[in-house]
Amino acid sequence: MVTVKAGSHVHQILQLLAISGEFPASSLHLLGNERVVKALVHRLESVQDVRFSLEGQTYHTKMLQVSGYRDMRTVRLSKGAIPLLGELHPEAEVYYLRASHGHSFSGSVHHIGRNHRVGEAIALAMMAGLEYRPYALPKLHHGFIEKQEIPKPSFYIARDIKGTEFDNADKTMFTRIVGAVFSPGGCYAVYNTRSAVMKWSGMGEFKAQNYLSELARCNYDVSRLKQRSYSAFEIDSTLLLGNNPGVALQTILESDKSKRKAARMDSIYPRVHFIPLNSDGIRLLQILTLPDWNERILDALFESEVRPKPGYGFMEYDACINGVYVLSHLDSDLARLIRFREGLRLETDTERQFGVVCYPWQAEFLRTYLDGATRLRIIKMENLIEYINQDLEEQIP
Image 1: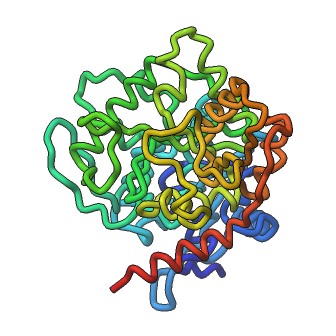
Image 2: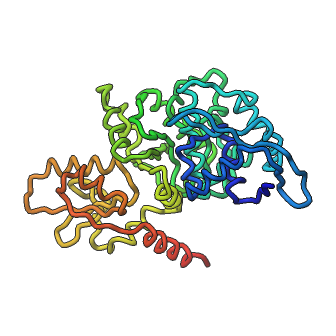
Image 3: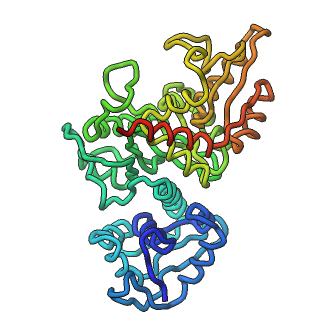
């Protein structure tokens, strides 16, 4: 017998599939220990008794079915498991049937790949502690300003963002985006490259950015966030999920092929935070959704006297320490890293030295990309999180 408890692996898998419909077998490590989760999935492919509490109803069913090969190997709910969704939330079963077209799945590589990208984004948000359940989130509206009560960082998938459109709105604007995050730390468009360079739809994504900015303005208290230099609020940041920072970087560079600089990814989103699809990415997402996360990181690294004055600087950097110009890459911002490297190439003063602060998992990529032209100072993520959490506790009255 399987007893489904809140927060257990079984509960997480049910919640995830109730929203995404299917999930890549190759990404089960996002849910915890890969060996344990894979063994559980295999067990749930067999018919057995399932209950949610000692007093509750007992279901005799197979919960999961796994099919496909290699990258297309996919995990789905079995038909007999659909009634279980009502135990998660009163609206979960209705949402699943609507999103999965009545428990009907396409065998198209394109459709499976799209569902997998969305599923990975949901899993990352779930494990990072964001609210990700569409039926538990306030419904976004468009065209009028009425602030929503969003009590915690929240992830809206693209399917539900589309639901706020006017009936005749251009659907092409959402060809690549998988969702959006609204949080005290920032509003982010979310994309997922997985393991391949993502084809960038420049003007379509420009429309998506404008539309998300309007949704944020209408629904979210954007006064809590730092705006850009002009008065109208605009989402200028994106979370670029993927398995490899090099592939994510190539996605940004490939977006320049249209020869229209304004349509390039790092022009539409001047801040492109790479989020690895693993436990490091989960912890990084937790940091990027905290209030004033950037200032907290910089305060942890540098004294105020070594920080550059606002609006001053010959290139991207965060501090100058004993003549060494240092960039913090602890936010995993690839767009800023590109600008930093361009600054290095244009630098003519041979006396200047440069450095980058990074996490251990970023070091190899940075050494290759920066051609060893800078020093690396490696910071453990757990030490940074401990400092930030202590800082937050000190502010609680």
